[in-house]
Image 1: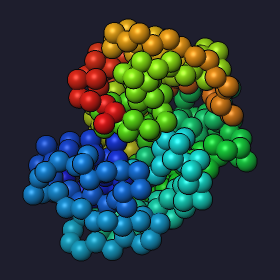
Image 2: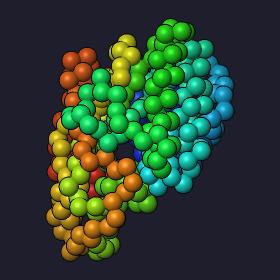
Image 3: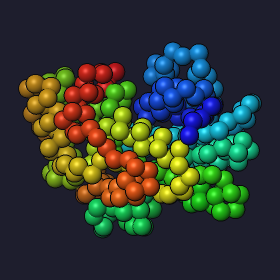
Image 4: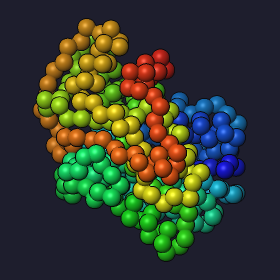
Length: 308
């Protein structure tokens, strides 16, 4: 299935810019919708088939012409950003998702809504399957992101049931790669920035909490596979290779040949202790699974200047 004209909300962000690039490579015309609060024009490819609309998805999206795919990726995704903009994050998850769904409804387009593994909170089930309802603190500092995404999932299902919108939900697990900001606040760019500067790598808590890191190239393949399906989901997208935060820090130091040490700092509030996706649905429904291991993915990221 090919797409002639796609809209990517948050298209100038880390993930969105890679999605724009992949859609252009497949022959689509692409409209990037972004207000550049966390994204950057420098992330976008120079391509005449790419249009840019500077807009806040918290306001209705009124785009002229046909659209056959809406990729709704707009939302602050790093703790640094969503803790700095808590109300805006909730508005993006609620009103932004509403407006993306309404655009897809008007245009008769397929819409893929990016949710997150954070809907599982600090999970009591391991690995996490899509049938698990999660263990989320609804009033903690991270709730502005977690609950925004949970609401976005509910709204997407409601539009599918009530209006017949061809919608899909993906739950994205930790993703890394080029174009992450040095001050992004997420683990990999923070460790890389610190290692390159010769500073200690700051590990929250004892570092034994686990993450499952998916390279952005793998994730984009999964997103497009979801777009090309008619599945509603939700479907987990992530790499089930589970590593501790301390292991990631040591890998970054080793791969960069840095002299940095590791410094333990206070644990983050509501920080999940374990995070690993069960990707059986993605394998079965989409024929997708990640192909890039962590060592190779980190090398690719360094080669492509991940933090700058």
